[in-house]
Amino acid sequence: MSVSPSTGKSWLRTYIVAYIVFLYLPIAVIPIFSFNNSIQAAFPLSGFTTAWYQSLLDNENLHRALETSLIVGFSAAFLATAIGVTVGYMEVAAGDRISRTISALARLPILIPGVIVGIALLILVNLAGLGPSRIAIVLGHTLVALPTAVVIMRSRFLALPKSFSEVAMDLGANEWTTFRRIILPLAAPAIASSFMLSFLTSFDEFIVAFFLSGTEPTLPLFVWGQLRFPKALPSVMALGSVILLVSIVIATAAELIRRRGAPDDDLAVTAKGSLPIS
Image (cartoon, rainbow, N blue to C red):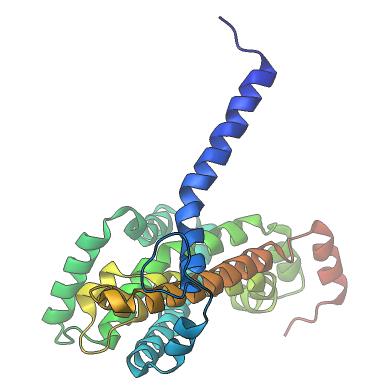
């Protein structure tokens, strides 16, 4: 029995709606209960309050965990983006087997279970004498965020027409000048997007931080620790709502920046007529 196109589209819409509801309804419940005037996460709501958000401002342990996450996140994002730019450009510019292998290895951690990565890194930092510490978390999160950075930068460099480099070479620029004066400025939106998404990956990461944290837990570890106390659940949901909002804003901004400044062949003509090479 054949199915008409309209029936197939109807089933597809139903499936998509059901999938979205299944995926996002539990997330949407968290902000709702964060305003509930009760420690019980249950319907019907007992009242409206912002006290749980106010309690976040008075929690010193939360502030220290947030500080650690911000320091680790910015450090890991900077390192991952810098390496991502290097690896991505090396693969696109060189295109040989070695560069492709290095790029593939840099993207490999995304396929490895987080528990395995955490255990391996814990053994490594212990052998290096660092032990569980903030530096160890930075190194671990750099590894976790690296695949994101490499994928973004590799895609950006592949999208840049080779005529840009050829124009620069015609004007007498060497390879480093071409990269610094032409490639990097054109890749700036992707670099910013890579940094933001790498920061978000580090900020939300739990498993690797669980193995590598010492006496300075990150924010996800702080949240996990608070879940043992039923009375802290409303504050945890308030904190989760804030993290969710910030994550959506950062991810949206990163995507908008990534799409900004798409390469245009006309830019090569403009560059050839106006770009000073030194």
